[in-house]
Amino acid sequence: MTDLANQLSIDNLFWRIVTKDDEKAFCSLFYNFFPSLCVYAGRYIDNKEECEDIVQDTFFKIWRTRKSLEITSSARNLLVTTVKNSCIDYLRKKEVEYTYMERQAKKEWLMYQDDVYSTMELEEIISRALSQLPENLRQVFEMNRFDGLTYAQIAEKQNISVKTVESYMSKSLKMMRTELKDYLPLILLFCW
Image 1: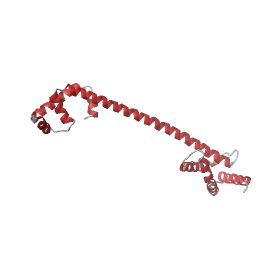
Image 2: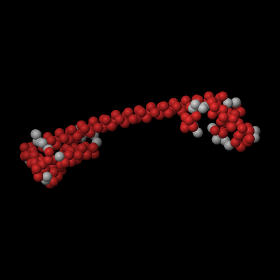
Image 3: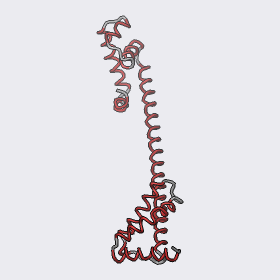
Image 4: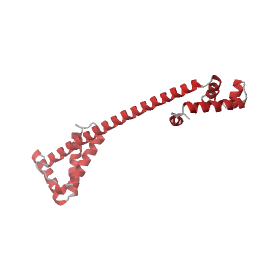
C-alpha cells in the first residue's frame, strides 16, 4: 500500500468513526496504529507501560470526542499530535509531582530536625534540673526513672529502707516539678 493509499484509508477510517460511530473502524484504527504510536511516545517517555497508557488514553479521547473532532490536516497528524501533547502533559504532571514530593521531603526533614532539637533541648533542661537535686535524691531518682529499678532494688543497692527511697522519690519529684514547671507539658509529652 502506498503512503497516499494508506493515508486515504486512515482518513476513511476516521470519517467512518466520526460520522457513523463505526466501532469496527475504530478497532481497526487502534490495532493498526497502537504499536507505532507507543514507539513514538517512547521518544518522550522512558516507561513502556506509561507510553501504552498514554496511547490508549489518546484513542479513548478520540472515541469520546468523535462527534466534535475537527481534522484540519490528516488523521495521522491528529493521532501523532494528540499523543505528543499527551506525553508533554504527562511530563509536566510528573515534574509537578516530583517538585511537590521534593518539597514535602524537605518539610519533613526540617520538622524532624526541629523534633531532634526540641528533644535535645528537653534533655538539657532535665539534666540541669537533675543537677540541682542533692546527690542522694538524684541517685535514687535516676535509678528508678532511668535504670528502671524498683524501690526495693534501690533500697538494697543503697543500703537504705524502702520508706527512705519513697521519701527521696517524693522529694525529688516535688523539686523536679518545681524546677520544670514551665516545661512540664512538653516533658510529659516527650519523656514520661
